[in-house]
Amino acid sequence: MNTTRPPTFFDRVVAATPQGELLSQCLQCGTCGGSCPSAADMDHTPRELFAMTMAGLEDEVLASNTPWYCVSCYACTVRCPQQIPITDLMYTFKQMAISSRRFEHRATADWSESFIGFVEQRGRSFELGLATRYHLFHHPTQVVKMGTLGWNMLRHNRLTFRPRSIRNIEQLRAILEKAKAIAEKEAVG
Image (cartoon, rainbow, N blue to C red; front, side, top):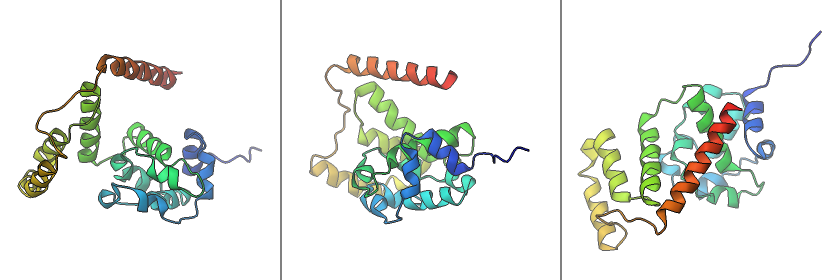
């Protein structure tokens, strides 16, 4: 008689994340959400996603916009008192949402794809282009509202009209191509 149970959602998340076993040590302290520059746009804080994961709420976790708004700054990971790899867990949630075709927040996926596109082209983000593209396609009526913020950013030299490229962009492109090749190889193997 086989008494082994199939892996739970929590088990699969832990297995798919380097040092994912640390997730079980989450104290629910809220440091991650308090450290996150994107928390205001997230429908759940990271700690809420972790509690939902432990409760087996797979559909809710994978439909959340939280991983898509993660900017991978690692502020949450660095500040976590339990050293939980929060940013890596966000990548795991994204991968699971994509592979299971459960992610419904196309706007945040578009934001992520636009950001990655600018980084691949120029080696850095282009905030004006990123915000303009996002708002024109997803919130065109809010473009006017963003004018004051844009003006203030321009006045304080925090926004440029033209994208700038990093030096040695070809080296970055070579690194990114190699990373993509490794990821494809791991996905197949």
